[in-house]
Image (cartoon, rainbow, N blue to C red; front, side, top):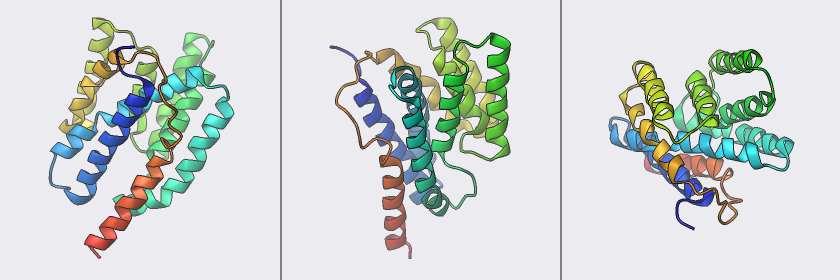
Length: 210
């Protein structure tokens, strides 16, 4: 089968995230690693949307995100020297929105998404309302010019707030379009990879810059 499986997209998301975080930790004055890494988050969002649609247990899926988010939090704060909550909490809120808004009337859906966006800003969660907007857009993904223009316009609105290095995320739907719907090999390592790579970066930083 031609195209990219979910496994391929997980490898891409993980690899691009590492590039992003290597740049943030070891080359903070260089923009190019961050720009390359900006494609990672939309891929995590795509995988979240697909996972919510196909999971056999939404409860287990959410619990896994919550537990790994809690495990990751102290490492995340140490490595990036921040107080905000990490990306797994953003994905957890997005997962809840995806499930709760199913079969709800449009006004109620809009209220839920807006409430979630506000909560991510209030509690200072990584990617904030931008991330919630991305999850909402990705849920309604269509391989059409109109949808693509909406995605690009959304990013152009956010550039003044997040910085020009976020612009490469505009290209992420090209990878959505390349997805073939096949799961591919199981990737039990995927979510544990997040705290795992953060811990490794923290140890390397401590060794190189004691």
